[in-house]
Image 1 (spheres, one colour):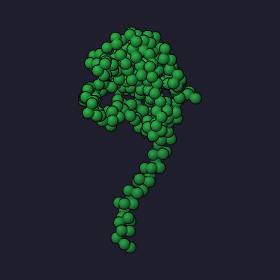
Image 2 (cartoon, one colour):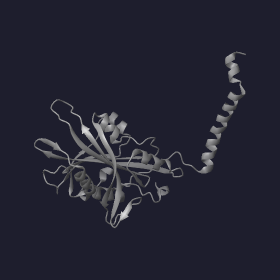
Image 3 (cartoon, rainbow, N blue to C red):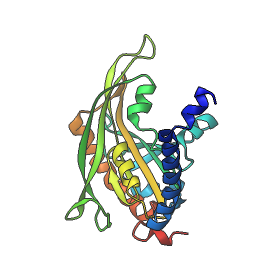
Image 4 (cartoon, rainbow, N blue to C red):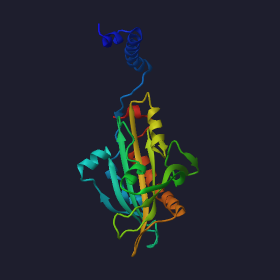
Length: 267
């Protein structure tokens, strides 16, 4: 018998093989006995994002709706449930640095094996520099809307968001550097998170659930002057974000995101 074959016949090696084989079989049995649902089924939006009632966003006016035409980019995004809208705050002064907003909302369901496309990676991948990343809580006016998993104070809730500051690096010799903010949060399986890691933890805790989903809401503000775009201070951006999300969040919660109180009854 060759030395190579002898090494495979050593008791220690055979014990390891037997242990791994037993563990693999036991894992499947244990999953069934414990009732874990590792393979999730998709739970649909109540209404497509394309059906968002833009009139209910007032005083924000939708000025442009974009669709991703490049199939490679769409496949990289990993979902066709999304909106990319440009908004104008009709109440803001023409010179306000938060008069305009880019709003990007995505939805994933079933067994997504990752939580993709956070701005920390996408924006830096496009060439800009991440300067800071902070967790913030926005005071959102929700009226009579029932929203779980958030601190409630009267008719307002405290929404956890991620506040990022980027340095725009010039793409050509005519551009100059400037700083701007991007904000986002997730709604995952009925709970809110302000980071990809937090979203993954929420989804990882859903061992017994039949369904799974997460949605990301991302936005940035800007203003327009004859000399080009302008961007607000942190105080201006946070105040504008509270105003914007006081319109967006109740609408998503009551009309579009799945009802998570009884997800096992989903179609």
